[in-house]
Length: 163
Image (tube, rainbow, N blue to C red; front, side, top):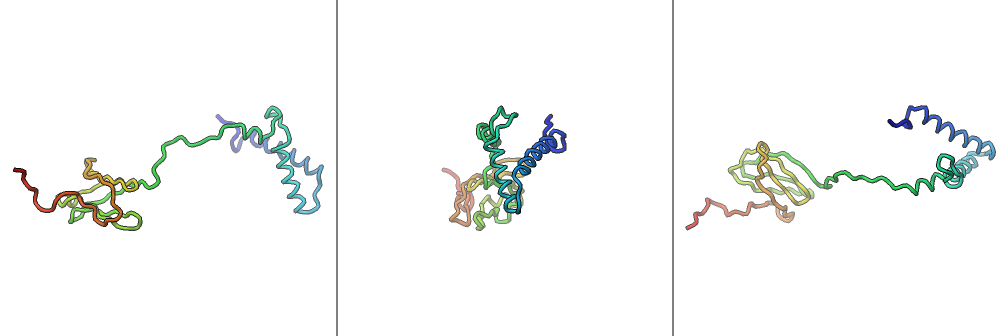
């Protein structure tokens, strides 16, 4: 359990001790104007952090101790910046519509899927269309941003029989 957060007596004691040191500095160096006071406060901050050795830091300065420590960094999972999840329903023409770079693009899925509820996973230009109820992959494609309609890649009309 940390004891140095807000509302803990130890925190107040640290701040009070800092104020005591600051008041002693200002008493030894009286200011006559607000600009003089600001200069003295700036000098005190520099002295306190860069020159004055601290007992709690083994006689090192706060800045020396701060720069000697490794810095924290995020190690968690990073979500791609343009990743989106959409829900939609396949229209009468057998397509869904998505927006990319302020342009609408129609993705062909087939008229047999008319009315089907889908989940669309969009990662930049990589698109996956899943059946919302079963999770089955209906279509996966790389969006061609130069085309408004993204065809399924099958010939129109009834399927042809192989001889």
